[in-house]
Image: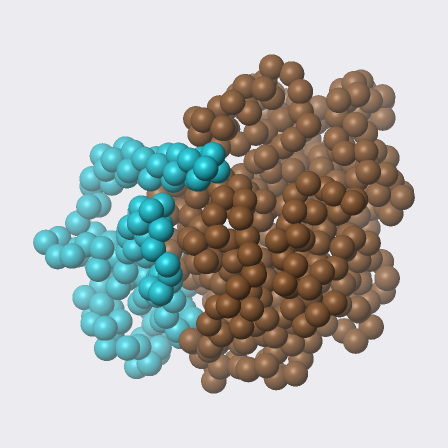
Amino acid sequence: MRALQWTGVNEVSTGDVPDPRVEQPYDAIVKVTATVTCGSDLHLLGGYIPFMRHGDVIGHEFLGEVVEVGSGVRDRRVGERVVVSSFIACGSCWYCRQQLFSLCDNGNRNPGVTETLWGSAPGGCFGYSHALGGYAGSHAEYVRVPFADVGAFPVPDEVADLRALFASDAAPTGWMGAADLGEVGPGDVVAVWGAGGVGQMAARASQIIGADRVVVIETDPYRREVARRELGCDVLDPQDALGEALLDLTAGRGPDVCIEAVGMEASGATGPLAALDKVTQLARVQTERITPLREAVYHCRKGGRVAVLGVFAAWADRFPLGALMNKGLTLRGAQMHGQKYIPTLLDLMARDELTPEYLATHVLDLEDGAEAYRLFKEKDDGCLRAVLRPGGV
Amino acid sequence: MRGRLLAVAALGAGAATAVALRRGRTALDAPGRGTLAVTVALTSDEIDARAGGLTQEAADVLGRARRTAAPGDRGTELRLDADGGDRAADRQAVRLLKQELETGSRMPPDDLSGRPPTPQGLVLDAVLRAAGREGRL
């Protein structure tokens, strides 16, 4: 079959790979009909998560049709249109029973890497390096879905492909950041750093949950405009007196909940700390550039909550621990527990309350995967997300 | 070329970090070095009920393991004495036992065979070959 493969730092190309097959009784094979670029893929492409092997198939956010199921699959049927959680979880271990699906004990086939780096291993993820299980990704004609009864969800007929697609990762990540990590509630003022797909979904989730006011902080003027237009929220440029603006917005308190949705390659930041981050990351002395996270901790109100949704790999320097401790903040982060949120999100999508299809600014054939990532990485032509259609556009 | 050098640098840093962390935690792990332990989200009775469906290898490991009830609702702690044997193999066997008991299937390390050899890949392959068998367990 055809698939988009990582072939070196900042190099991807569409090539031939073996068809996936049912390997375990709980597997399904899904024919991919839509799969989308994600900002976290850029960390892989750029070599910042150095556990990619030449030829690995990337992609983790997708939708498709079930074409084969293993003998143990009970709930999924051949022919169903399904959206699949990007994280692979068994549904049976203690973490899955707590609905902490991205922390599944059994989803990661190569736990030694992350156990060593982080103390214990999170679950596996499609197309996200051998550190997270080495599973083939979704930028392909077909993908093997382990534990299909747990991770694949039928899409209601009334929800179109390009809407349901974002229930795979961006929407549940944003929902988790607002609902669970940030514990957003009525009356809260929520600040979201980053107006990519995840940031916009976190902002929308905050609105749905009942936040009094949501402000999106973004360096890119086009993305700010999209957030303002599509979500009706306030937007701020972090380089334009951000602290004063947030204090003004909240009458001197600071946001109740700050959600970081940028990750380890924060761009556009200026000043000595940002410059030092860039140099030390380039030299691999540290692995992250965390300007938005520093801002979130600094500007959050006393006793507030900071949620980390952006992907980070290992270590960050000059983290404002003093502000965290002395202001009594709660800091939480997680990879998303999609299996917990996807049914709710599909229901919201069916009721037209969550309409993320505007994120799909570009739709290309799988053969044009390299161009899709160029558009996405360079934010060219107003690209928010580039969708690949393996069956043709 | 710059990109490839960056990749090599990143890989080197990652590998060095892994080694440093492993060295750093040896002292912490010292009291339990002879034991491998996992927590299975099943009661001891549930484990017995599923034992008949295990592979022979997993059943052998279960037979060697000591059981204690885990605190709270976490299930059962299984401990295996691993002195003198192949610790990496025992570690992987314990992981697979947990997988079989909890999920009814096995998730062995991913297969890197068939990939084109590359200079950077040699180092990464070595790290990944160990990744399914090593770790803190």
